[in-house]
Amino acid sequence: MNQKHSSNTVWHHATVTRVRRERLNHHQSAVLWFTGLSGSGKSTLAHALEEYLHQQQCRTFVLDGDNVRHGLCADLGFSIEDRSENMRRLGELGKLFVESGNITLTAFISPLKADRAQARQLIGERDFIEIFCDCSLNTCEKRDVKGLYKKARAGEIKQFTGISSPYEQPDNPDILIDTDKQSLEESVRIIAKYLNQRGICQLDLTQTVD
Image 1: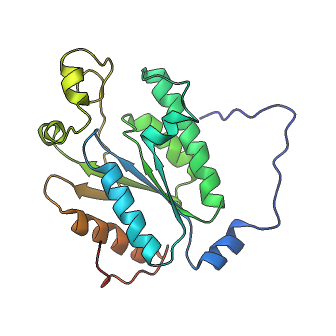
Image 2 (image 1 turned 90 degrees about the vertical axis):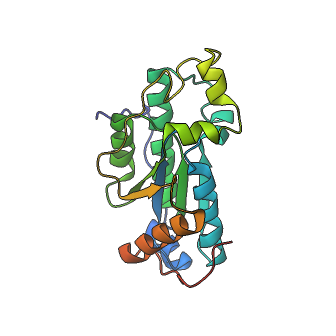
């Protein structure tokens, strides 16, 4: 991947570094990249996990796909090219959040393997944790509270992932959550245990998931 940089700019190195921020936070920073079809439970799980981490004094922030498209990526559509640019921007944003010392949780469909690989490269192998919310298309359509699948089936929404646009499942995600079968509480605990094992933070796994 060839990274482009703005001309006539120089990266400013702050005196308050990532290491100092992590020391203040009492945990390491990372990006938890949730991927899966619309309706697979990405946002629900990301926000539930954030609540669990917040209650244990972790510094967190959720980057939700819809929220980001309201501002930062409001100029982009849903073509393959625009989706790739959307992911590139979010990868760059995730990289900055890592430097902030936070645990960042993203909830993006991010349908293409190449785009997720680019995000991993931008953020860094050590800091990028891919979480695949695996869920059948049938279940996702049943959960369709926004009515998007119905509109896509009717041809009212073009280039809709899973219907008229492809979703490429991760081959080897860092964490696999079967949101068809695993409860929200079980899913949060699986990820929390992984974070402990990686040494990113030290969570009290006996604490209940609200």
